[in-house]
Length: 296
Image: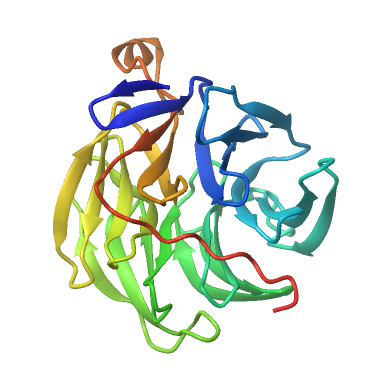
């Protein structure tokens, strides 16, 4: 892997809109997607083997583990179960299938095994997005009126959820029932980034409870403590990082996707690593995203 300061290029393949990373410790494999090009990537974290590219029949925004043989895909019209061995895909449940102008976006699995998944208008029309809670095949709408839902993540004990509308720029926290991942109180402001450079995008929480977010358009990752303070900013070698997740045998590096969406030729030339996928050493130990429970 090519390394620059604390960041290494995991995959040289450029993603139009890289997103939805996950990590399987059983096989030391990183998974992520290119939403706009309908591609799923598979690559061992250790070693020099190139990423395998799986062409998908629809746009997918998030990948989550189910077990050693299956994974959950959040797609433009619903949730699907994919068999890792042969790539067979079957529908699990619909999601906003009547809103043909929408697609899925950021998502994370809560420690209870339920999924939080965001949706948005394909052209980011204001207020068309929502965040849903999915337990098994039961879908509940949690928050509406969002534009670009992102930053979905959870405290280590599952008692607090985090999310952001990137268009608004306010990272929010909400108290949760740790047994179910359902809110038991209203959201509150965790950090107000309005007016700051770039936008808060995807997030992952480390073992100490710090919320690590990608800052799209600002070439960095930020860490927020549970009290709502931005305590660290770590540069990355790409202008538009999109989403981190902890990876590696010791969960001591952040797997970070990126995008060249919206960049013209001059902007891409000024950002030579655009769209690539990285491993970044932030000096923190992470938490493995839980598996989605089909029978929840």
